[in-house]
Length: 332
Image 1 (cartoon, rainbow, N blue to C red):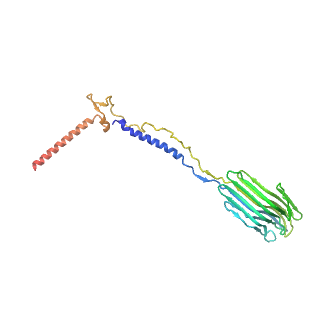
Image 2 (cartoon, helix red, strand yellow):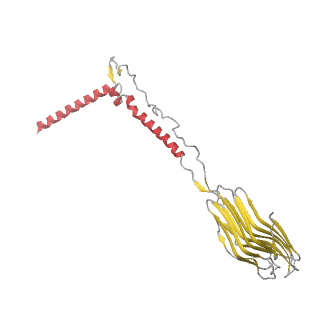
Image 3 (cartoon, rainbow, N blue to C red):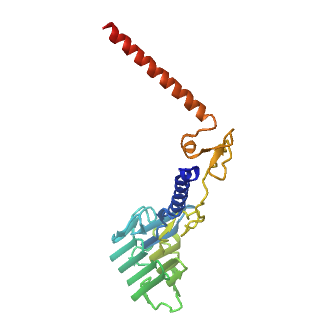
């Protein structure tokens, strides 16, 4: 076997290793990126929110009245159904019911596909300090809804059903959305009806918003100013899921390089003699010596002398062994 034949398996192994490395590359690049939940949606709902400033007669201080009924937020909370809310300190030290209703529900829900706020208020009466026997406003039924769904335009809706009474007077609300009611000796109330707004990801709906300016001059109350909001709902569309990072490279379908047909390393040494055209090497006497065995053993021009020396040693050792055995027999 000559030296070219001996090196062929080396070339094949190197080529196979190259193909294997190129085949693994696309698999590593194509590993899926990690995913995480995107921003959660938001939803709120509140039956009543009051922000009033009460001036006490004969005093230079204002008593703030801040109250809310059934105010919920999702995903933190879901629903409330309380029917009344009381405040103290604004009317002669006695508690006062800001709102009483037969039905007062507020719901806020959020999941991966939508966020929704909803309020339903039935047969409700709203009072302010200084007017204990006269309702600021009475409503038969009001509802508000804000719905934000993924992939859809947000929706805001408010409805005021049945009659509305302001300071005991039935009031026809303006289709334009704003109505002003004045009562001599009591005060003035401005009502905003069914206020709604939407953006690309949010919605808000308010059934009634009342701007209050009253001066009852009773029970030590000189003036009441502020706002009262009924049936308000809001929402924000969930963002859904998105990859947290992108692959650094696009995976390749095919190897980027072809395996080489050449060995990965060159021989460390060149042959010490130049082969002849007949496939042997020249000797001192002009003859040739076959190279086949030399290629297998790595021999050179000194190999015949080494072989002859080894043969002489072998013969001498054999002769010594024969002599030793003969002497042993003659002694015996």
